[in-house]
Length: 400
Image 1 (tube, one colour):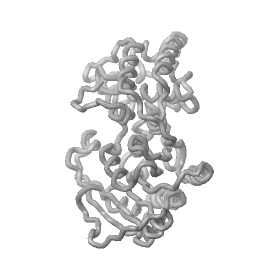
Image 2 (cartoon, helix red, strand yellow):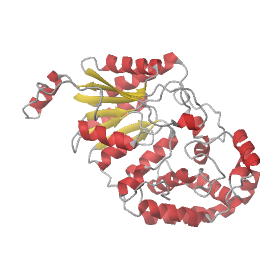
Image 3 (spheres, one colour):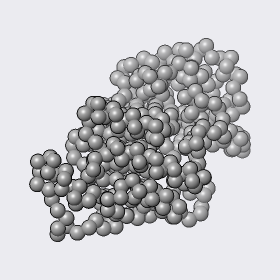
């Protein structure tokens, strides 16, 4: 399971990687930002949660994380690792689904050519049973099992349920079939129960990260954030001291196209090209992109404290950066801006997929609270507020 030289000696290390996702948030980055700008017990907000890296980091560091994710795949990953079901329940459910697969022999034979080239007959039966029987939206056990299955649905030969394929994204059926035929690769004929049991037990072998009330919600932040504001107020949860997020970059990738095969396992159409909504594509319409960012930051403002830090990682692409910065400054006009360039130090994921054009790199846009806001917060909390005297302004290098 861990063959890439990384160490997985703790529960945090074993669970933080749940969810191979194209353009993932680096966990070390999230840890550093959260440690720098919050204290234990504080609230962290991520309105573009992805696979939940920032929220999981907050939970592991004894903060409470709240976020929203529009992709069902990302949401399943995030929700599962924030509160996985007990190991015994997950293993029992796995065997139930394996047994149920015997009822899907005819459906497995009737699947399109792609699925026959991608998965062996026994795996196809198992996946159809999974698709029909796991209630990933409402059942913690089913969601945990689904999250782990999604990780291993496709990937390298011998490390997944599929024929040879990238793990972070699924290729189109036409491309995949041609590649498999040209290279003579076949789907692995494996024992699904044994294969998945080994990986489930490995994931749990160091325990789990203790749940502390962190939550991620499935849907559009524009509509979910007002509901989250009301819920946090009702539950007397303090407003977020840190908004840490990375909105989708303009025109870079279509997360729903990339995850079409995993979406199929969740019950959606087996179509890599289907359009799933105005905010679930590649973001190629400039005005819609600007509106999305402005609306999300505007609604997020009601969930963060006056002295909160707004920390956004985005692309240095001129349009993406300007649209993001405009939305941030319009929403938080009294905060002071810090910019930190983050050049790519190794080949990007798009480079690995054949895009060799120069990349602009990334940039961290940070809005720091004004001295007045920090002073008011310090007085309200009974603390003597600190000043910036002698400390200087944050520079463009160093730790977050």
